[in-house]
Amino acid sequence: MGNHDYFAREKQFDPAACGIEWVKMYHELHWQERTFVLCHYPFLSWNKDSHGSYNLHGHSHNFAEYNLQNRASDRRQYDVGVDANRFRPVSLEQIVRFFEEG
Image (cartoon, rainbow, N blue to C red; front, side, top):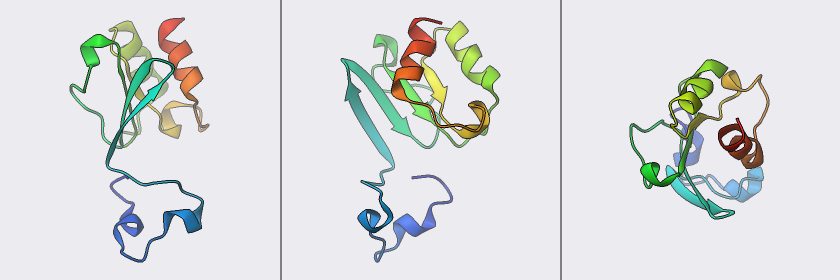
């Protein structure tokens, strides 16, 4: 949930009616033996960050250079916002490839 998602805090909000599976403030996703820490806001440190986990976030409206700098610093933090990704969605496969094959 982002800082402007006031609708999601309303009692009458039904995520399923909007085609949304869930809305959370924080979530840890385990996919293909990797851990992804999801939050609208970027973290200074996150669960298992020193063990190869990823922090996927938005909020900051960064440019692509932000993600490139994180990769160069061996910091698996990725801004998934459209500003940093040519105004396109990005998949987990693309993010893993970006860090592991980049």
